[in-house]
Image (cartoon, rainbow, N blue to C red):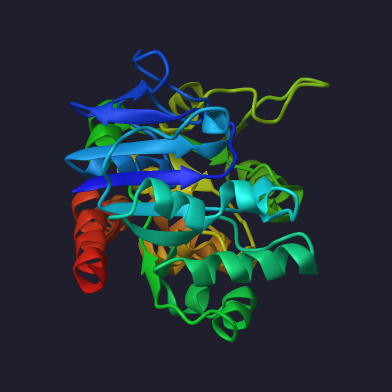
Length: 337
């Protein structure tokens, strides 16, 4: 299959994948963006181009002064979610314009971000999705499928929906960052958005003091950007810790960070992201009393720790591996072609 992932506008530059390595479209050099581990391993849906005989990512904004590449595609996942939803740019990033360039491709409307800023952009999102051949987004739980925004869209968009797992390069993460010898340390993880941070720092500080266990966290200097570390530098900090706390109360996010913890053999505690409930169902809560009880069980029982790590790893590969997501997309394509 020849596949393209597209956005209307993004900070990520256009790239294509050859021999399991991403190369920049405009210079043919190996390409690494800020949230990539390397030119061989990206995160979340940016991994999709790695799954196919030919795969690429196109940031349409880069090509506005030139023609999009003269490739043939069987399947395109297109997120028109930023400037392309504004009235004054809608035609520049329209599905009809994309069909003129790639008339043989199935074009799926990719919902990358759940919510939009205002009613006018919501109207244009509905228009955009109705122009596509189907709708795709990353999330597979029944709870995710029935969030309010999706219920609203289904009232106005007459297209079939497909809910996919986020692809995780389990082999790369395992080969480079997995270890049996973890430090008896808690890593306190915070997502970037403040509303998703919960009480992770306060609760892990409490546990550290009560049970005499070291707690580590990402250091941020005054005035320093929260995302100042590369993905590679960041995973090197936390992947050596036995325990990973992420008490994110959001239930509308896939939970990419916790997919990574499962790949490298850490145990996650807390949070309601989808991957938390799938990979670590026993610890997927924000109830601190329950979390403390389960944490103490793991702290004192090596067999319990092994069973949790094993379950998360096996489930990760079953649901989020490249093979699993490729099979899901092939099924989608066969239904629509």
